[in-house]
Image 1 (tube, rainbow, N blue to C red):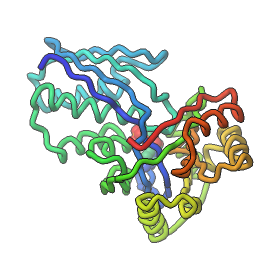
Image 2 (cartoon, rainbow, N blue to C red):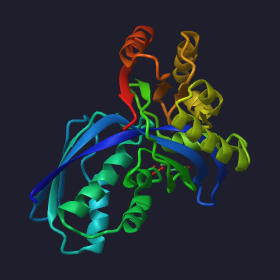
Image 3 (tube, rainbow, N blue to C red):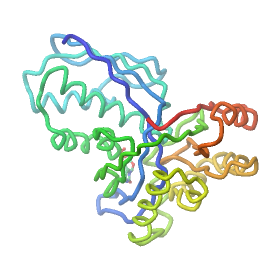
Image 4 (cartoon, rainbow, N blue to C red):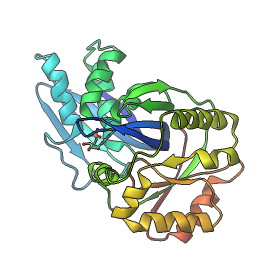
Length: 291
Ligand code: C5P
C-alpha cells in the first residue's frame, strides 16, 4: 500500500462538567463526546524519510507545531527506522472551534500510519501515544460514535449510539484558545460533586438512545460556557437568539466558540439550517448528523 485516505470527523460535547483540578493545572472532566459528520480528509502517501504536510486551511502551521507532525515524531521515537510520509490535509473542521478537529486529525493519522506501515500498535498503545498529544485525542482512537470521557477527558468509556441525530452548527470565523478558556474557569468554584455529572451523563446517553429530545434539555450542560462568554460575549447573545426563536437544545461545544443545536427527530435539518442562517447571517452554519 503506497497511500491511504481517511476521514477525520469532528465532535461535540453534549455535556461537559468540570469536576476538579489536577496539581499540574489540567482540569478533571466528565463529558459526553458525540461524533458528527463534519469531516476532514487526510491522505497519507509513503515517502523515503521524514514528514511533510500540506493543507487547504490558511494559517494552519504545517511544521513541528502541527499535531500530525508531533504524532509522526512520537511514532518515530518508537520505530527509529520508520519510513517517511507526505500528508494532504483537507480541512472543513474549523481550527480552535471546540470541535476537536486537531485532535481528530492526530488520532486518525496515528490509526492510518499503523495501517500504512503495518506497525502492529494495539489500541492501548495508540491511546497512550494519543494522550500525550492532547486530552481529546483518545476519544477519536476508539471505534465509537459516542463515549463518556473522564479524567482529563482522556479516559474513555465507549457508548455506541445506534440511532442518528441531526445537529445544526453555528461556527464563528474566529477561534478561541482552549487554554485561555480553562484559565478563565479557574476563577470559578468547582460546579458539582462527581455523582451528579456521572448520573447526568448516563441519563443523557439513555435518552439519546430512546430518541427523547425534551428529556434532554436539562441534561445538556457545559461548565466552560461562562468563561467562554466572558472572553466572547457574542456566544451568549447568539444562544439567547436561538432560544428566543424556539430552538430548545442549544449549547456551546467544548471550549467554544461553536454552538450546536440538537434537533428533534421530527424536524427537517435543511429547514432548520435555513432558519438559523436567516437568524445569524454572519455565521457559518452547517447541518450535520451523528457519524
Ligand atoms: O490537551 P490539550 O492540549 O488539548 O489542552 C489544551 C489546554 O487546555 C491545556 O494546556 C490546558 O490548559 C487546558 N485543559 C485543561 N484540562 C483539560 C483539558 C485541557 O485544563 N482536561
